[in-house]
Length: 328
Image 1 (cartoon, rainbow, N blue to C red):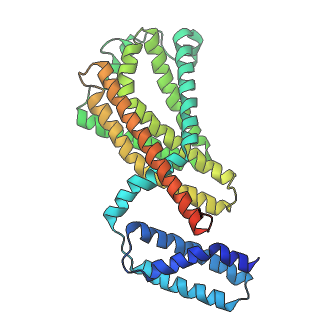
Image 2: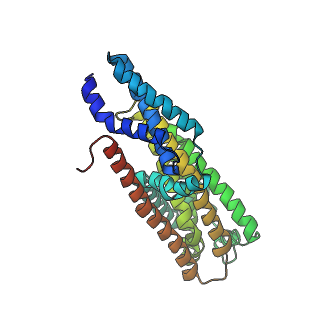
Image 3: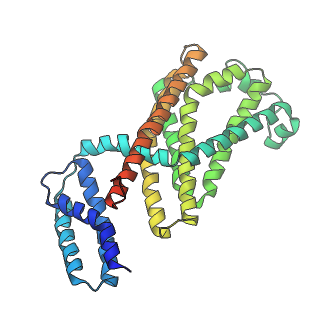
């Protein structure tokens, strides 16, 4: 280990930690930075202690860490500032960093669903395989089970029920992702359910009703499921391929990002539940209901790809600056 090169590489972050530990009042972002720098420098000191014979360097870093530890223990984060930072930085950035995963999950889900719907619509063999009876008018007819599902309960109670159920589905996708197969199974089962229903409604000539009742809430709801599935699968893949980090460190880091996504999706699913409870069964024309669902989806995607990308870029630039790799 080249101690001199190592010291030069990390000197800026050590100086920044020293500066923050001496500073009087810290903002929420500065307090978060202080904690992150303290943890990183503690690891770096442990590495130096096992390689470096330079007692002055080790003593100096130890003094900085002692002062920083006291600052960390005494610092009280502003809960409202942290709450705001979660919604403007942490959550959108975590979703943005996994967008390739959940976009892929979404594309495969749509393809599988469309394929199943077409197969069920035109094939008796498909119906035999899934045990679908020949007469499905009780489900597909006007006022049938498909439509009354959205109208048979009071709006507020139905919205709460939907929110709870969807939160449970996304939690399973997120936190069983480490073993991968449960997530894949959950996504396939949801695709099968939607595909079979779509196929039966198409066969009955009622695709207008199918999309009119599904899309107002389903676009945002399914996007949340895709995000959960993609994040869960990424967590599982991190266990297989941790990259440059140790397996434990990589899984711990991705696990924290997954937990952040889980918390944020609670709010997304709450909005989806409100749409399903109040907009989907409303007396508005189908184009208006679908338009509201599309608007909610567009706002979510803009939120992720604008705020999320910005927060990700800011974090990268900050890390490069600490390492002395920023623009000069």
